[in-house]
Image (cartoon, rainbow, N blue to C red; front, side, top):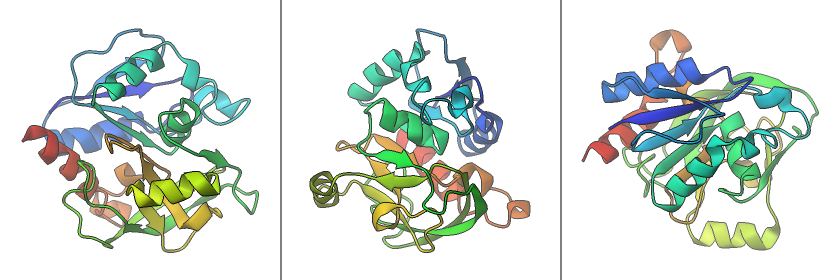
Length: 221
């Protein structure tokens, strides 16, 4: 399995993600600058956390129009797995690859702390190694993680199994405790928590390895 990580001006978690992917796959991922117009042949595209373009306008709004996003959209439409973490989730929503939007945290403060997630759907390459309702300990670090989507869209998403994770201890006011969502085909995942920062014992949790191992084993099959 080969992966590519898209790097935007202001990304700051690409190296964390690269280390987690290399541990899971045995291969160094490609780091692709946002102004590129082509991607190498890869099985997974990851959009990392950070503050793309300094979070001007709206989080992810400017990055969603970077040249490389045309290729990301094309690959996603053809079935390539795309994973957006934190700022990457915001970019995927702004690019309309995922439904909904990430608003300011309900308490209007940046939050950085450990959280516990509940796995809502294991029928995806990202979560296949997880057990239904399994709890995963990881962290969040964001000021705009308050997920919102219109009621009718949410109902449809829940019916199609598009809710990936829910918070057990909602840190930002997200609707229905939603921490991560899939697109309809479940080849695109966006999530606010950082599994790449829960892969070493010194992180306080290694639960994030579950997701990296899941995608690696699924795409290596």
